[in-house]
Length: 356
Image (cartoon, rainbow, N blue to C red):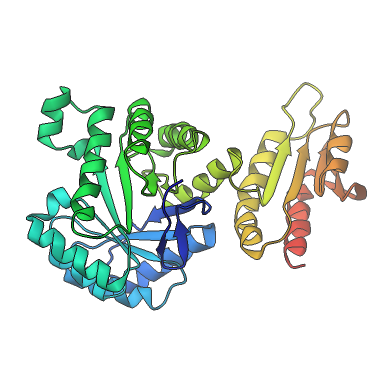
């Protein structure tokens, strides 16, 4: 088991639940926009939010945002050690650096000393695109072995400076390499590991790569905190991250939607209804998870063969007929409504349940 560190009030490692991270993509210097996006991410279930800090104005804006939001903030720093120090002084709950691009060991130590003074963790990050030249030469290219060794090396630099409140991240866009590298890294350190698939791409490809890449690591017992990386709205990263954790059994589904495959008996637009239900239930699921209410099972069924039975087994459900459907609540039929009213009625029932 890894050691435990704290990012604000969120525990990372040491048996703590796997936390979900994302990263803002608005201009960090625009405090209003930054706060809005951080709150959107928090509403979606994000536990920790990372923000790019490219200059001093961004560091100061991070500090202003920190005083207005409810989740821990991580300052993402590259190259300039003074920005890392400024971000820490502004109240960042954690910083992310690559010691290899900060500069001299004296500059790295200045950052470490400031983090130690404030008692905040440092995440050291290595990506396949920034692997050190000597490791590329040693292994004949970018390899899993090189990534793992690089991560251990980065940790060692800071540990030698007398600080152990560390998290390590090694990421590749190659799912197999990413998996193999983490297996090797796990043998080299007891520090918490942040997992993900870097540069995974647009939603169509990135969701698949992230689900396989992150899910396989979690099933192997690797990963203390995670980020899904998509070329899309970061809120979608959080939603997919939560689904991955639910799918591998590390989080209970706040709202589970079950729906039947279509067949020749279906006389309603089941595909459309099931997808609409999933989309509209998503924000309600995030709120339900935050409230600590018991999970719900929702059934969206297409015909009279299995529909009523499955719907009766669910907390709430709908079973379609010809242009209309039955609405179920805790096993009982409560009404029959037209097809175009089915999802609205289902949402009303779940919203009311969320208020209990």
